[in-house]
Length: 176
Image (cartoon, rainbow, N blue to C red):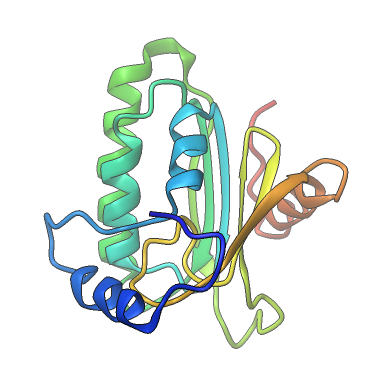
């Protein structure tokens, strides 16, 4: 359950112990984020530390997302990049099967090398124009204590412009 204040130590320890990386085990996340993501048509993600267990959670959540037509994930290049790509490809094919002709862009960009982009520390997501800030993995799908904030209009605070600039930087041009 999402908290609006700091949890007790025993709750943090319980989350840490119960929210491991075991395949097939449902991991906790930020309920408010997933409620918004499951209703979103467009989701943008920027997360330098995104890993394969996080991608499994995203795959499992988003395959049941009825409205999603655009998904762009810009993540770090890590040792488990091949496994992340495999999970994403699985998600992509499931989304394509369910969307028929309503599909827009489904992109995974794994080019953020931490040494080359050390200025990217926190993680961000945009769901249908709302900017989210995560202290940890986008979606809150890791087992440590973290904070999430939301509520900014992504266009007004130039987050959409930032995402577009990253896509151009990597020479990836989504169709209009």
